[in-house]
Image (cartoon, rainbow, N blue to C red; front, side, top):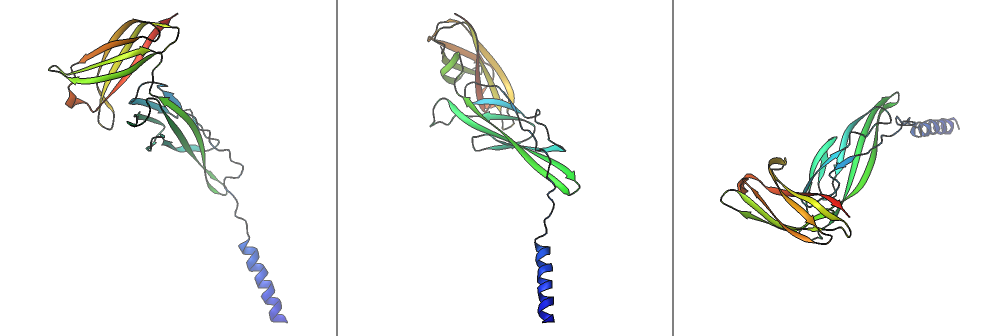
Length: 221
Protein backbone atom coordinates (compact mmCIF):
# COMPACT_ATOMS: atom_id res chain seq x y z
CA UNK A 1 0.00 0.00 0.00
CA UNK A 2 2.78 2.41 0.90
CA UNK A 3 4.63 1.60 -2.34
CA UNK A 4 1.48 2.36 -4.37
CA UNK A 5 1.06 5.67 -2.57
CA UNK A 6 4.58 6.86 -3.28
CA UNK A 7 4.24 5.76 -6.92
CA UNK A 8 1.08 7.85 -7.24
CA UNK A 9 2.68 10.90 -5.61
CA UNK A 10 5.76 10.62 -7.84
CA UNK A 11 3.59 10.36 -10.97
CA UNK A 12 1.59 13.45 -10.01
CA UNK A 13 4.78 15.45 -9.36
CA UNK A 14 6.30 14.32 -12.67
CA UNK A 15 3.14 15.15 -14.59
CA UNK A 16 2.88 18.59 -13.00
CA UNK A 17 6.46 19.29 -14.06
CA UNK A 18 5.70 18.30 -17.66
CA UNK A 19 2.65 20.55 -17.77
CA UNK A 20 4.49 23.60 -16.46
CA UNK A 21 3.76 26.57 -18.71
CA UNK A 22 6.81 28.44 -20.00
CA UNK A 23 6.17 32.23 -19.99
CA UNK A 24 5.82 33.73 -23.46
CA UNK A 25 8.46 36.48 -23.84
CA UNK A 26 6.32 38.18 -26.50
CA UNK A 27 3.14 38.33 -24.41
CA UNK A 28 1.77 41.87 -24.43
CA UNK A 29 4.42 43.12 -26.90
CA UNK A 30 3.09 45.04 -29.91
CA UNK A 31 4.25 43.73 -33.30
CA UNK A 32 5.98 45.97 -35.85
CA UNK A 33 4.09 47.90 -38.52
CA UNK A 34 5.40 47.22 -42.04
CA UNK A 35 4.91 49.72 -44.84
CA UNK A 36 6.82 50.70 -47.98
CA UNK A 37 6.90 53.31 -50.74
CA UNK A 38 7.38 52.60 -54.43
CA UNK A 39 9.13 54.73 -57.04
CA UNK A 40 8.18 54.63 -59.88
CA UNK A 41 4.50 53.70 -59.70
CA UNK A 42 4.11 52.81 -63.40
CA UNK A 43 5.99 52.40 -66.66
CA UNK A 44 7.27 50.13 -69.39
CA UNK A 45 8.98 46.81 -68.72
CA UNK A 46 11.82 46.26 -67.96
CA UNK A 47 11.71 48.89 -65.22
CA UNK A 48 14.08 49.67 -62.35
CA UNK A 49 12.02 50.37 -59.21
CA UNK A 50 13.05 51.61 -55.76
CA UNK A 51 11.26 50.05 -52.78
CA UNK A 52 11.67 51.99 -49.52
CA UNK A 53 10.61 50.45 -46.18
CA UNK A 54 12.19 53.05 -43.89
CA UNK A 55 8.74 54.29 -42.79
CA UNK A 56 8.14 50.94 -41.05
CA UNK A 57 8.43 51.15 -37.25
CA UNK A 58 8.60 48.68 -34.35
CA UNK A 59 5.90 48.19 -31.75
CA UNK A 60 8.75 47.78 -29.25
CA UNK A 61 12.45 47.13 -29.49
CA UNK A 62 13.90 47.62 -32.97
CA UNK A 63 13.56 46.26 -36.50
CA UNK A 64 16.52 44.05 -37.37
CA UNK A 65 15.54 42.65 -40.78
CA UNK A 66 13.69 43.76 -43.92
CA UNK A 67 12.85 40.83 -46.19
CA UNK A 68 11.32 41.17 -49.69
CA UNK A 69 9.43 38.88 -52.04
CA UNK A 70 9.18 40.69 -55.38
CA UNK A 71 6.45 38.57 -56.95
CA UNK A 72 8.64 37.38 -59.81
CA UNK A 73 10.34 34.49 -58.02
CA UNK A 74 13.21 36.54 -56.58
CA UNK A 75 13.97 37.69 -53.02
CA UNK A 76 15.81 40.61 -51.46
CA UNK A 77 16.75 42.21 -48.16
CA UNK A 78 17.41 45.69 -46.83
CA UNK A 79 15.44 48.77 -45.81
CA UNK A 80 15.83 50.28 -49.32
CA UNK A 81 16.21 48.04 -52.37
CA UNK A 82 16.40 48.60 -56.13
CA UNK A 83 14.75 45.88 -58.20
CA UNK A 84 14.42 45.32 -61.92
CA UNK A 85 10.94 44.16 -62.90
CA UNK A 86 10.95 42.45 -66.29
CA UNK A 87 8.35 41.23 -68.74
CA UNK A 88 7.57 37.57 -69.26
CA UNK A 89 8.14 37.10 -73.02
CA UNK A 90 5.17 34.76 -73.16
CA UNK A 91 2.91 36.92 -70.97
CA UNK A 92 0.78 39.99 -71.64
CA UNK A 93 2.25 43.45 -72.10
CA UNK A 94 0.96 44.61 -68.70
CA UNK A 95 1.85 42.39 -65.75
CA UNK A 96 1.23 42.27 -62.01
CA UNK A 97 3.80 41.67 -59.27
CA UNK A 98 2.67 40.86 -55.72
CA UNK A 99 5.35 42.41 -53.52
CA UNK A 100 5.53 41.25 -49.89
CA UNK A 101 7.61 43.04 -47.26
CA UNK A 102 8.31 41.26 -43.96
CA UNK A 103 9.93 43.22 -41.15
CA UNK A 104 11.44 41.43 -38.13
CA UNK A 105 11.44 43.05 -34.69
CA UNK A 106 13.58 41.98 -31.75
CA UNK A 107 13.25 42.85 -28.05
CA UNK A 108 14.77 41.46 -24.84
CA UNK A 109 12.12 41.00 -22.11
CA UNK A 110 12.25 39.63 -18.56
CA UNK A 111 11.10 36.27 -19.94
CA UNK A 112 13.77 36.22 -22.65
CA UNK A 113 14.24 37.36 -26.26
CA UNK A 114 11.10 38.26 -28.21
CA UNK A 115 11.01 38.14 -32.02
CA UNK A 116 7.91 39.33 -33.92
CA UNK A 117 7.17 40.00 -37.58
CA UNK A 118 4.87 42.29 -39.54
CA UNK A 119 3.96 42.25 -43.23
CA UNK A 120 2.86 44.66 -45.95
CA UNK A 121 1.61 43.57 -49.38
CA UNK A 122 1.15 45.60 -52.57
CA UNK A 123 0.28 44.53 -56.11
CA UNK A 124 2.30 46.55 -58.63
CA UNK A 125 1.12 46.80 -62.24
CA UNK A 126 3.73 47.58 -64.88
CA UNK A 127 3.91 47.43 -68.67
CA UNK A 128 1.88 50.42 -69.90
CA UNK A 129 2.66 54.12 -69.47
CA UNK A 130 -0.21 56.59 -69.40
CA UNK A 131 -1.06 58.74 -71.16
CA UNK A 132 1.96 58.34 -73.46
CA UNK A 133 2.69 54.65 -74.00
CA UNK A 134 5.50 52.95 -75.92
CA UNK A 135 3.72 50.41 -78.15
CA UNK A 136 6.86 49.03 -79.80
CA UNK A 137 10.56 49.74 -80.23
CA UNK A 138 13.69 48.35 -81.86
CA UNK A 139 17.38 48.68 -81.03
CA UNK A 140 19.89 49.18 -83.83
CA UNK A 141 23.69 49.27 -83.77
CA UNK A 142 25.27 52.26 -85.54
CA UNK A 143 28.78 53.44 -86.30
CA UNK A 144 28.54 56.05 -83.54
CA UNK A 145 26.81 53.92 -80.88
CA UNK A 146 23.16 52.79 -80.68
CA UNK A 147 19.81 53.88 -82.08
CA UNK A 148 16.34 53.21 -80.67
CA UNK A 149 13.38 53.53 -83.03
CA UNK A 150 9.80 53.05 -81.93
CA UNK A 151 6.24 54.26 -81.66
CA UNK A 152 4.29 55.85 -78.83
CA UNK A 153 0.53 56.17 -78.52
CA UNK A 154 -1.61 58.63 -76.61
CA UNK A 155 -3.73 56.28 -74.49
CA UNK A 156 -6.03 59.07 -73.31
CA UNK A 157 -9.57 59.23 -74.72
CA UNK A 158 -9.96 63.00 -74.45
CA UNK A 159 -6.62 64.64 -73.63
CA UNK A 160 -4.07 65.84 -76.17
CA UNK A 161 -0.36 65.41 -75.35
CA UNK A 162 1.04 68.86 -76.05
CA UNK A 163 4.59 67.87 -75.16
CA UNK A 164 5.97 64.42 -74.46
CA UNK A 165 9.30 62.76 -73.92
CA UNK A 166 10.67 59.23 -74.23
CA UNK A 167 13.76 58.63 -72.09
CA UNK A 168 16.10 55.67 -72.63
CA UNK A 169 18.37 54.58 -69.79
CA UNK A 170 21.18 52.10 -70.33
CA UNK A 171 22.22 49.80 -67.46
CA UNK A 172 25.06 47.36 -66.96
CA UNK A 173 25.47 44.35 -64.69
CA UNK A 174 23.41 42.91 -61.87
CA UNK A 175 24.01 46.04 -59.79
CA UNK A 176 22.08 48.14 -62.37
CA UNK A 177 24.85 50.66 -62.98
CA UNK A 178 23.54 53.52 -65.13
CA UNK A 179 26.01 53.98 -68.01
CA UNK A 180 24.06 56.32 -70.29
CA UNK A 181 20.84 58.20 -70.96
CA UNK A 182 19.23 59.80 -74.02
CA UNK A 183 15.76 61.06 -74.94
CA UNK A 184 13.42 62.09 -77.73
CA UNK A 185 10.94 65.00 -77.70
CA UNK A 186 7.40 64.52 -79.03
CA UNK A 187 4.85 67.23 -79.72
CA UNK A 188 1.09 67.49 -80.16
CA UNK A 189 -0.20 63.90 -80.08
CA UNK A 190 -3.99 63.64 -80.35
CA UNK A 191 -6.00 61.06 -78.30
CA UNK A 192 -5.44 57.59 -79.74
CA UNK A 193 -2.76 58.80 -82.17
CA UNK A 194 0.57 57.00 -82.62
CA UNK A 195 3.83 58.83 -83.25
CA UNK A 196 7.26 57.62 -84.40
CA UNK A 197 10.35 58.47 -82.32
CA UNK A 198 14.13 58.04 -82.62
CA UNK A 199 16.69 58.09 -79.80
CA UNK A 200 20.34 58.18 -80.95
CA UNK A 201 23.10 57.68 -78.38
CA UNK A 202 26.86 57.30 -78.26
CA UNK A 203 26.53 54.36 -75.85
CA UNK A 204 27.76 51.25 -77.65
CA UNK A 205 26.06 47.82 -77.33
CA UNK A 206 28.96 46.22 -75.42
CA UNK A 207 28.71 48.91 -72.74
CA UNK A 208 25.24 47.96 -71.41
CA UNK A 209 23.17 44.86 -70.62
CA UNK A 210 19.61 46.18 -70.71
CA UNK A 211 17.56 49.27 -71.57
CA UNK A 212 14.74 50.96 -69.72
CA UNK A 213 12.26 53.28 -71.48
CA UNK A 214 10.22 55.87 -69.59
CA UNK A 215 7.75 58.43 -70.86
CA UNK A 216 6.49 61.76 -69.58
CA UNK A 217 3.79 64.04 -70.95
CA UNK A 218 1.97 67.34 -70.55
CA UNK A 219 -1.70 67.20 -71.55
CA UNK A 220 -4.67 69.45 -72.14
CA UNK A 221 -8.26 68.94 -73.36
